[in-house]
Length: 156
Image (cartoon, rainbow, N blue to C red; front, side):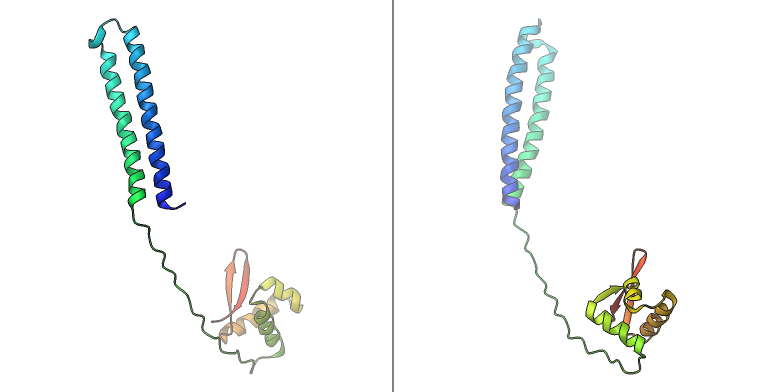
């Protein structure tokens, strides 16, 4: 919801609260008049006035918040577009066949879990780790920790 709509809603709630305060105030005043034997000097009247003022202050605060939201200027949304640079093609020269397979799979998938690479290539954990270490040293790929797994992505 927009701030203005919320402000109208809060002002409406404040008005309903004020009506309820005045209705309860009148009912309680009648009950005090019927039950208090001291007349207008009864201490319950002063207690009622204090409670009424506290209630009206709370209603006023809610009303002020609603009015503030109605008249406050909406914040402007700033949209920033990121321009993606064209990635230069990765040179596969100087890579052995396993390293090329890893790079091609990562290029196809965009990002792939290390465990998935192990399954697709049929390589053991140690062998794949060594290949990925070499590719990281050549700054072709990057491993990022995701929980208990690594995800392999091409280096930017």
